[in-house]
Length: 68
Image (cartoon, one colour):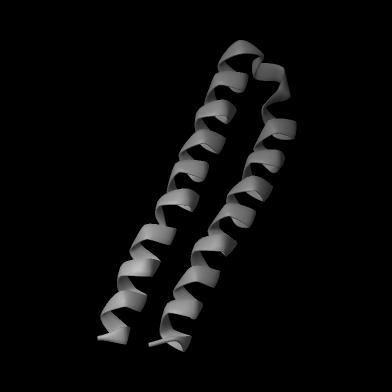
């Protein structure tokens, strides 16, 4: 029973990073569309934000397996 709750908890915790990644790349696309010259600078910032948001999802996955 506790394993099912851990997997459900991971599913709920994955919503936050998913929304965050969507917002990061939406802002990146919007920024490049407004000012194409800043593409290289914005791309590095977007990749850094993606990595940090993805780390939260991976951390949640690890915790789901630990508490299973």
